[in-house]
Length: 87
Image (cartoon, rainbow, N blue to C red; front, side, top):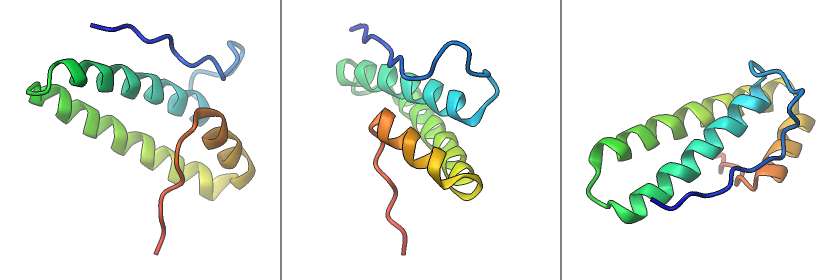
């Protein structure tokens, strides 16, 4: 398995329960699972786990965009996440 270095955008002092930290953590998991699935294309259980994590991250991003639009835009800019299409 190819190890990717995790993104280190969020400082260590950041609260682990904050939405930003959770999105950051899910993004690292998504990158690891994506690299795993490139090697193991038929690992359907990992595919399911990836879809679940993507959904959790999406729900957190929707919550953050409603609560604080500025922090939301900063976070997706730092992590390189595309903004979902609306409408």
